[in-house]
Amino acid sequence: MHLRKNVRMSSYCILILLMLHFTWLFPSRSLSNDIDQSLQDSLGYAQINRTCMTKTEKPLAKPLVIFITGASSGIGRAAAILLAQQGHRIYAAARRTNKLQELRQYGVTPLTMDISSHSDNVNAVDAIITQEGRIDVLINNAGFGVKGTVEDLPMETARHQFEVNFFGLAHLTKLVLPHMRKNKSGTIINVSSVAGKIFIPLGAWYVATKHALEGWSDCLRIETKDLGIKVVLVEPGYIQTEFFDASFDASQEHAITSEYKVFADAFTAFTMNPKTRKNASSPMGIAKTIAKIIKAKKPKRRYASGKMAQSSILLRRFFGDMPLERIWSYLIKR
Ligand SMILES: NC(=O)c1ccc[n+]([C@@H]2O[C@H](COP(=O)([O-])OP(=O)(O)OC[C@H]3O[C@@H](n4cnc5c(N)ncnc54)[C@H](OP(=O)(O)O)[C@@H]3O)[C@@H](O)[C@H]2O)c1
Image (cartoon, rainbow, N blue to C red; front, top):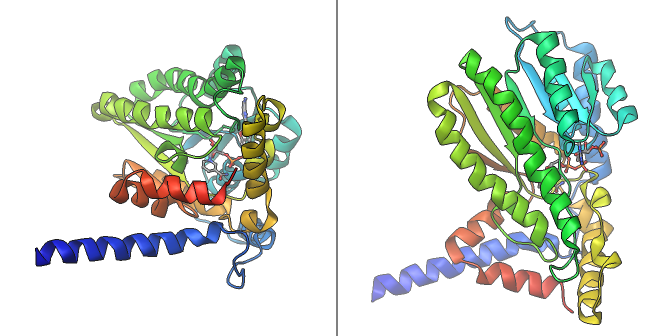
């Protein structure tokens, strides 16, 4: 009886601590201990630039051939620069050629491609294999998030979300696997999201792609384990990138009922609030996690990293769905 009371008390304490942690989400809170994100970002990149130019790293005995998608901005760009600076041979892919060209100064080779295009994927892998003869690391990072309610969003929008975030990634992986299998070695890093573990209002299709990616990657890991191929998931939290600008705000365009419109407006106001966005982590943190995975002999199966990642996953794991649902309902009132 006494023990049960103690367990309940400790659970409440942990819940309160987690709720306090979540208060960063509230735009009205004091920002005294927050570093200005744009400053933090520019510091992050400046740090890489400085290291690139001044630090003469010992050349790697065998640089790895790394193929990274979604490298024209955000996490992918930061990872491409960091890994190039560490001496690896980087092939960086995305649709925006002009943004990719900027990476040449770091020794990165740009590859223009749309991951939802079958032929683009084939051409990109062929180009790397022709040049290098192998791909040691595939970083599946390209992605975007469509926002909108299930009822409002057209099925073609939902399908495109899956084409980019899931089937495009799966196709690329299938193209790279035979080469890794031949070499009996390779690492596949799938950039999932905290949304692969929790749920977000108006994010049903995005959340579905990331939940799918989690399960798919776990199955793939078992299949390739004895072939020398590692499969690792990265679950970023809230990261300051172009993600929220690039995300197609279908919630506005396709809101068909007044109830959803009010909900969509509340969510957009919340996510676009500069104070909320200032609280996001730097993409450099995720880039460092990726670099750590590549170095590790025995990487973990998944790495939750960045603002809110571990706390929200723990919150759901230990307390179920209710607290998260309550937090979202509080933040996004109709
Ligand atoms: N930011 C966050 O808070 C957050 C949190 C959890 C997970 N993530 C995940 O992290 C990954 C990287 O996102 P980010 O935050 O760095 O956002 P970002 O700055 O918008 O970068 C997304 C990248 O994906 C590329 N991309 C988008 N659609 C593409 C397509 N059809 N074909 C090829 N490339 C495409 C974009 O390049 P182009 O537009 O030039 O093609 C861009 O380089 C995504 O998978 C995202 O789901 C982000």
